[in-house]
Length: 230
Length: 230
Image (cartoon, rainbow over all chains, first blue to last red; front, side):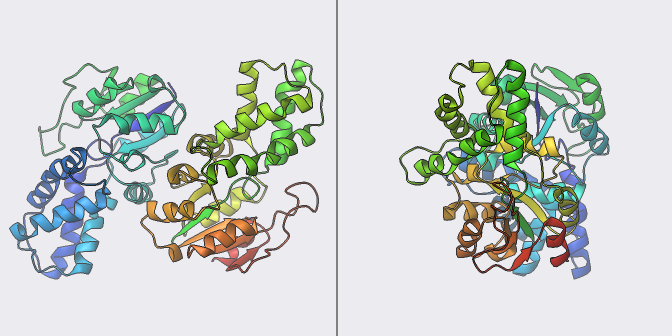
C-alpha cells in the first residue's frame, strides 16, 4: 500500500459546525438571526441532488463551488436571505473553504504521512481543497478527486482517475471515509478501504459508528487508523 | 497576486547532475561505465521532440514518464545500454523522480509560501511531481501543469487550466521559470512572469543568465525572488 485517499466533508472536516459558524460570523453582524445549524443542514441537503444532475449526465461537470452557490441560492428564501447582495453571497459560499478539521486529524495525518502518500479524493474542487488545506495546515501530496475525473463520487472514474494520477494500481491505494457508500464504490474498483467513525456528523448519534459494508480497516478516528496501519 | 506557478526541470531542480548521478548510482554497480553527463544531455535532448509529437496532435497525450521511457529506449544503443533488462530500465526511468533542487530552493519556497499559493506548472506528470516533492520535501498546494491540461507547455491551455484549477484570473498568477520561452507563453495568456537565472543548467555558462523577453521580475535565485515579491 502506497497511498491513502481521503473523503473530506464529514470524514476530515466537520462541515456542519463549520458552515453554521462561518455563516453566523458573516451574517450576524449584518443583522441576520437564524437557526445556523438548520441552515447548514439545509445547504448540505442540496449536495447529493445537485451532484446527481452531473452524475446522471443532465448537467455538464461543474465544480462543487458552483453547485454550492446554486444550492445556496435555492435555500436562501427559506431562511429569509433573499435580499443578500452578490458580494455577501460569494463570501458566504467560501464558508466551505474554512471548515474545521475533526480534532484527531492533524496528529493522524502527520503519523500517516510518514508511510503513505496522502491525497484528498473528494467531490470538492481543487481550489476549494487547496484553501481548506491552507486553513487547516493539511499537507497533501496532490489534490485528486472529482475535478480531475470530471465526475462525482461514487462514479467509478473518480477512484480510477485518482489511482492513475499517482501511477498506482487500485490495490496500492486505500480510500478513507466515514461513509460506507463511498467505501463500497472504492472497493468495487479494487481499492482498499478504511472506515473512520464520525458518529456525530449530522448531529449527535447521526453518523455511521461503524461501517455497514465489508472494509479492510474500521477505525475510531485518524490516530486509530494510523495505529492500525503501522 | 495570489499564486506562483513553477517550472520544474531546470528551474527548481537540476536535472542534468541529477540524471547523471542517479544513472551512475544504478548502472555503475552493474558494470556499466559511460559519460554520465553526456548520457543525461542525450536523454534530455529527446525531451522537446517527444512532447512536440503531442503538441502537434500526432500522438495522444502521454504522461512525461511514458515519454521519458520511450526517449530512454531511443538513446540506449548509443550508450551501450541495449541489453538492460526491463526492471533496470524501469528503475532508471524513475531517476527523474529523484532530481536534486538547486541550493536556494528550500529557503526560497519557504519564504514564498508565506504569501502565495505554490504549485508546479510543469510538463512532468502528477505522479512524477509528487515523488519529486517527497524526495526534496517540497510543500506544494496542488500539482497543476500538463497532466491536468492534457497537453504540454508552451501550449496555452496548460497555463489556462492551471489558473482555472485554482479559480484565479491569469493576472492573479505568476509563472516562475528559468526559460524565456515558457514565460513568453505564460505572459501571452495574461499571467505575470518571473525569470530566475539558472546560468549553469546545461553546464557552466549555458543557461539564461537573464530573460530574453519582457518579464515582471528578473531574479538571481529563489531567495532573490522572495525578496523582490516581499
